Length: 230
Image (cartoon, rainbow, N blue to C red):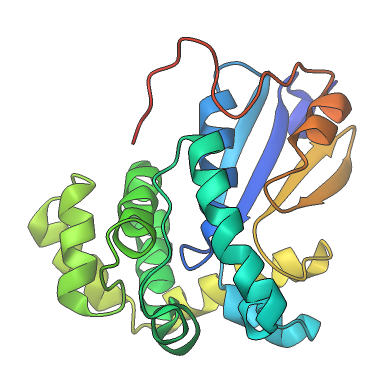
C-alpha cells in the first residue's frame, strides 16, 4: 500500500482543535498507534469554529439533550480511552464563548517554526482546558502550556508574537479550508491517503474502519503494555 511519493507507509492526517474533547481522544489514539501501524502521522492543527461556520453545523452542547448526553459520554470515554477528560464547570463560557482561536494560532506558529513541539504543546493545552479547567486563551496561559511542553521561554515569547501576523493567520485558515475540502463538518477528522485517494473519518469512534482500510489490527484505544504519555 503505497503512500505519497512511493513510500510504503501510509500518510494519515489528523485535523484537530484543542477546544474539542473528541479531538483529544483521536489525537492520543493516533499517537499511540504511530509505532504499531505502518503509517506516517501528520498533525494538522485547524480551527473548529471556522469549520462549524462554513459547514453550517452547530455545537452539540447547544442542543439540550445532546449536551446532557455529552456530559455523561465524556466520563465513559475518559475511562475507556485512559485520557483524563472532564468538562469545564462553565462549559458555555469556556468552550463556546471563549473558544480556542488564540491557542490554535499559537500551535500553528509552533508548527511553522518548531514542529517537534506541536504534539506536547497540543497535549498541554488539552490538559489545561479539558482536565484542569484552566484558561487557554490568555497569553500567560498559552506560555504556561508552552513551558509544560518544553518549549524554551524566549522562543515561546517569539512565537506568541507571530500569532498576530498574516502568515500565521493564513496558515491556520488554509489548514481549516483543507479540512473542509475533505468534507469536514466538525473535528476531529482523520484522513488516510491510500493509493492516491484520501479517505476521511470523522470523530473518535471509527478506528476499526480506519484499521480495516489500512489492513492493520485495531487493538483498542490503549495498546497492551504501552506507557501512557499523559
